[in-house]
Length: 417
Image (tube, rainbow, N blue to C red):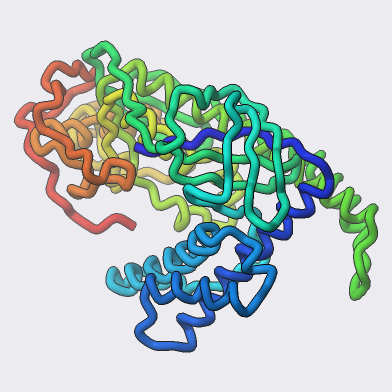
């Protein structure tokens, strides 16, 4: 399992200039590799790695970058190419590789950098002359060996520069079984509604800060000069605008992280909808609200904490979870504006989101309790090679809703959207 530790990097202005030059060089190598693949048939991953050495001989600024950093840039290019081939095989949206023009990071492997003995400073030893940077953060790198650090990434953000360490370690933690299972339904009115009848309010960080964001964007636009080099005042206004967006993004990330952590710690199984967020945001009337909630970020943290603490997380198909009655199973069609589920067959009345959460829990338990797999038998990327056993202790889970007793898998009625 790979964990990422991030530290704020402090240095001198000339060091920041050197970092920017290294980032531009990494972008140049990636784009050159992509162009080489476009112009030549049958180019593979190792051909792109060989191209890095050719670029180093041809361009002095490329030679100044560490050789493994050049290879990491070539791997980025190959990652987009292989993703394009995979999409072609799946017959989904292709996503043809594109050239990058605003890259914000450069990645080193196991060479080109050196940590100090106190692990609070890092020195980059290639010819880009970045030098020694001071690291400030709450993580303790003394707990890990240098050999466990597989990647070191320098990242540029609106408020400064950061250094990320990708560490290969077993971060799993044993926790006491709770005996509970829960289904969660993500929404816009409520951030989360669970099968226990509880709801968590949607904080709406972007909506609350939208007025300040619009004002900062207006000030930035006033200083823009069309067809001319931009002034320092424009760059300052642009940075202020980016900082405000960064603050909203961090607020959302910290909030969903806390909610996901609490859900994992309180249950032995968490079932949630396998939502196609990229497709949902194409709705122009709800795109801003959906993006403000942060469904994808919540799912990523939920799966990460589930893997770390041994809690089973199940992604179930979202089809008809809001329409089906959780009490009798009959389908009751309702518009999106109807927020209360009233079943004409059995008379059951419940909040629409809570009713959906109960249905999600039913699907999750019927899928995992017997087969030990995810919704369609697929495993998320972080769990590849881990293996989910059917003997996971789920028989002791006590859901607070009417459940299917036979534990058989649900039939796949239609593919995920």
